Image (cartoon, rainbow, N blue to C red; front, side):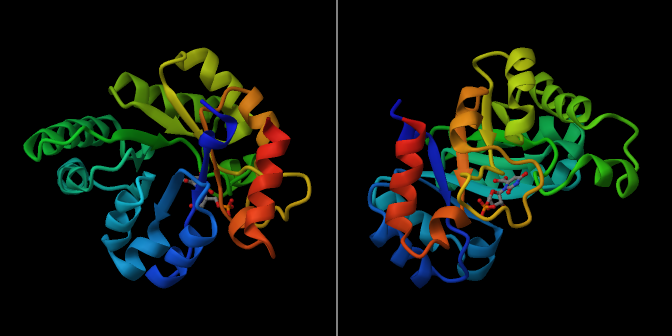
Length: 236
Ligand SMILES: O=C(O)c1cc(=O)[nH]c(=O)n1[C@@H]1O[C@H](COP(=O)(O)O)[C@@H](O)[C@H]1O
């Protein structure tokens, strides 16, 4: 796979019009992420637009609920025929299992391939201090992230979302077939913003990420085309 096919650009805007403007500006991007801001603002229409343009789609709705509810949400999401879908590992094993089963059944019911369900391990906006003092988790951060990834793997999920700082360890423990998606990616020249566990795109890929999720360093740049091009050059 070309290095630039491994970049998923986050469409974190608040209207379909803004999203389409970014799609028009960046036709070279092949994989887009639709997250909570855009989906809640404008609904599923954008998914159809991305499909018409033959783009791959990461539908990042980060489900987090009881088994019956996440299963229902996954069954409904299966009809969108996206490539990746997210759920929080902290839902627990029963909910992860129910979600995976419902997604597979939902996709079969509409005769579409099943999206890959991937689990959030620990949000990249959190650091070890917050894990210990705010969330009161009595584990070292890398150990916690690995535990959450293994929970997803043992439950039959296709992969996990993790920070690039943990991806090497997760790759070693979860194997090559487990899809590892890394947000919290920052080129040296970009603002860190609210991301706490970052690495550069090149270092994240070298550490074992399958895909990088990058938003603001591209979409909020003065020149998004130049920013995307610069990142592709840096990782080639
Ligand atoms: O699931 C995600 O994609 C995600 C998980 C995570 O732990 N951290 C994280 O930043 N994300 C998403 O990745 C994107 C990162 O955007 P930027 O910080 O602008 O590059 C946002 O859309 C986040 O919702």
